[in-house]
Length: 113
Image 1 (cartoon, rainbow, N blue to C red):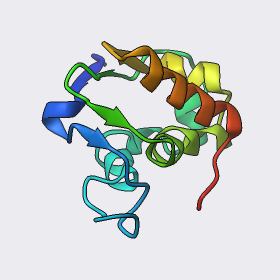
Image 2: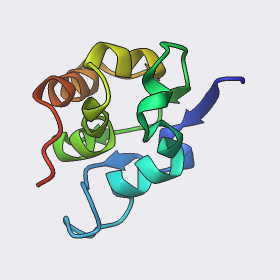
Image 3: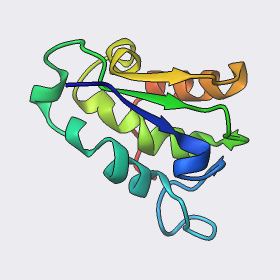
């Protein structure tokens, strides 16, 4: 299976800050993002190998917030360790601060609200 490549800022939204439909204006939220692009990873079997699944291109993303990162990526810590998550979900063209936010939320674990 070929690795999917998603230009997050173009295909989804350039400002990634809402955890779910209840936060701020609720639009373009992490739950929606996870269901749209990462739903195939929402089971233990998907994490049994370290093959890359998707590349997320962040070149058009202006901002990512901790609550979005926690809900979109930290969610998967219930299946595996942060390092394996970033092997399957590869972040390309991401600035240092945004990557630090994602890594911090992965290391903190999933916290639903």
